[in-house]
Every structure is written in structure tokens, then in C-alpha cells.
Amino acid sequence: MLKGKPKGWGRLLVLLWLWGCGGGSSEPSLFGSMEAREGIKALEAWLEVAPKKNWKSAKDSVLRWLEAAKGTLLELEVQEHRIQVQARVPVSQAEVFFTRVRNLGLVLSEYTALTDITRQYTDIEARLASKDTAVSRLKALLAQARTPSEVLEAEKALQQALEARDELRTQFENARLLSQTVIARVSLRDPTTVEYNEGGSYTHQLLKSIEAGWTGFVYFTFAVAYLWWLWLLVGGVILGRRWIKRRRRHRGA
Image (cartoon, rainbow, N blue to C red; front, side):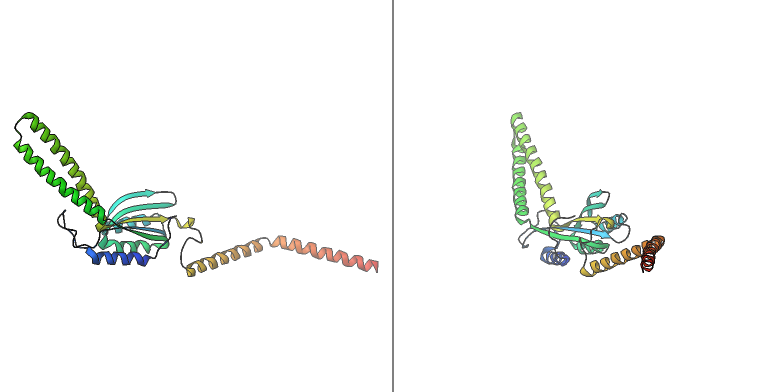
């Protein structure tokens, strides 16, 4: 069972809408300016569903919808009574994707987490720009080197700077992906393991309780009908005892 207090699904849709209005345009350059953005957000969404039909085959539907949304599968874990899907979904396709998954069956829990990564994003961008400047200077020093020792020293420093820059570029790309996609964590539950109080509307739970009560009544009726001979035996014993008592009273009179 997913932990955390469930929040309304409408919140996710509102967040997606606000996010799209606040800066959904793509940045063609890796070093796009951040001045026009009010903030860089990373959104994660958790959704646990008990599919109405074959819950194992529902996994194929989720993966098909993920592919249609041009998302990326990060992790797939199949357990005995649960299937976990973790994926990265573009913000523009997230609403459609989550709506489809939600319609698979009974939603057991759902909540979202919105994190401001503006400081992380701008910090990596600044460090990357500084490292680019350092690489340019080291290349200039390497070109000016005259002795073998100067060349080796400049090459070593340049190699270290290039490796550090590549690491920063990877971090920057990850931060950019966080700002343009939603981390989706979907859990498909075996409906037979779902407890009565784990979710659903009041009407749904009421209908479930009526269905359970009716099923119990039917089983009880069949049990009574099947044990008819026992009831005849009990009735015969009661009538027999009454008949014996009545005869004794007549004899005593």
C-alpha cells in the first residue's frame, strides 16, 4: 500500500495546467536562459489502482499508453499480487496518461509531490558555464606550452576539466528532464487482495457491502436447504419429547 495521505486527483491536473502555463516551451539550447521562468519544478505522481479485469494484462495497457505518450520506462517490477511501473512522462502527455491508468479500475490511493529545483538547476548551469571557461583557458595554455613538462601538465589539467564538465552536463540534462517530465509511479494491485476499507467512494463501498450481505444470505439458504434432514431430525426429537410428556400426564390423571 502506498504511504502518504492521498490527495485529490484534481490537484495533479491543476499542477500540470499551471506548469504548462508557466514555462512549457522547449529550450533548443542546453544553456537556455532561466530569467524568463518563475521557477523550475519537478513533479512526481503516485497512483495505485486495482484493475477491474485481468490485472496482470493491465500492465501491457500501461506500457502501451506510456509508449504512445513518448515516455521512458525506468523500472518494471512484477510481484505475486502487485506490478510496479516507474516511468518518465512528458508534461504535455501526463494528464492523458494518468487519466487512462486511473480508468483501469478502483483507485486505491493517489498523491503528488511538487519540488522546486530552481536553485539546483541554476547552480549547475553556473558551474557548467564556469567549467566551460576553464576548459577554454586550458586549451589556450596547451597551445602555448613549449616544454614537454608544460604540455603534460596542461593536458592533465585539461583532461580533468573535461571530465568534470561532462559530469556537470549529465547533471544539467537530468535536471532539465526533471523540469520537463513527470516521474510516474504506477502500482497495479491484484483486486482479490484489496481490503474493504482501502478505497472507493461511499456508494461503491455500500454496494460492495450489500453484495457481500446478499452472498452470505444465499450461502446460508443453501446450507439450510442442504441440511433438511437435520432439521427433520431435530423436529422429530422435539415432537417425540412432547408426545412422551403428554402420555405421561394422561397416565398420571
